[in-house]
Amino acid sequence: MLATLSANGDAAVASPTASSILWIDDDDRGTDITARVLVAEGFDVDTATTGTKGLLLAMSRPYALIVLDLRLPDMSGIDVLRALRLVGLKTPTALVTGFATVAMTVEAMKFGAVDVIEKPLLADDLANLARRVGLSAQCRQENPLAQPLETPAMFKSVAKLLMSQPQLSLEETARRLRLDRHAIERGVLIYTGRCFREWRRGFEMQRAAQILRMSDVPIKAIAYELGYTSQRAFAPAFSAVNGMSPSHYRERHRVTLNDNRG
Image (cartoon, rainbow, N blue to C red; front, side):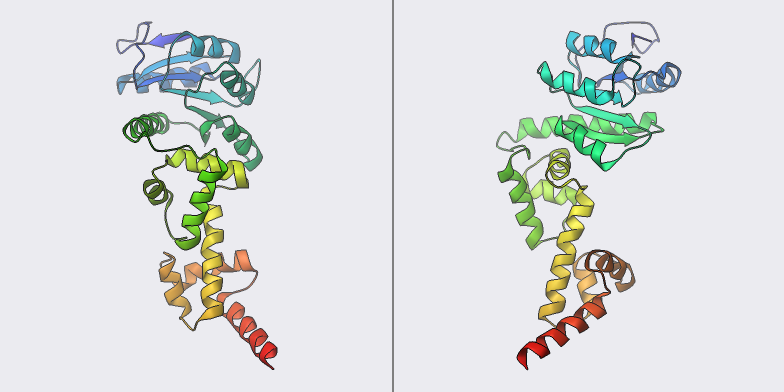
């Protein structure tokens, strides 16, 4: 299907608004059903079943969001995303797939994808994503000094903040640095190949290991300081990074210190 749906169900040309969505997916039946739900919620939705048709639509009018299936009949979603960037279109684009991998996510983020969503894709998923993208655009307009994360300097600023305060959430990190949360997620994936939560956990465990080495602070207190609800929740995360439990780590380190002093 290649159409623009209006609120009354007829074909129409949608005006370039913050609620305009281009959805490129060869599952025309599922796309049509979900698109009608989105239209009922006030969104303008264009759909295309091939990458070629999607590219033509993307270049014919501005969109607030492009949703792109990874597998299309004529080309891959990554190829479409690459083509969009080659012609200078910077429209926020989300990739949809039934089998997301870290490598594929990193590749998508390199070309500016704002999100990678696993199927099944619901109308609420798209509506929430479109609203987040709209809020991010508004934030950039209201904060002209805010900079993207695609520079080493900006990535280092995020790393520096998390080194000192590894318990910070993605939202709080974005707020303090005046960066878009999607830009942070994209930058972390590009530079590290890991999602933000996994990357931040490394800083948490570095901080925990430092406290265990340098003090007698109870393990439960360390867990609370890093935002864990209990020592039981904290211990497996620490072991996954450091290869041993917090108590064994502290014990081994103290033995090493005593041996060095002797």
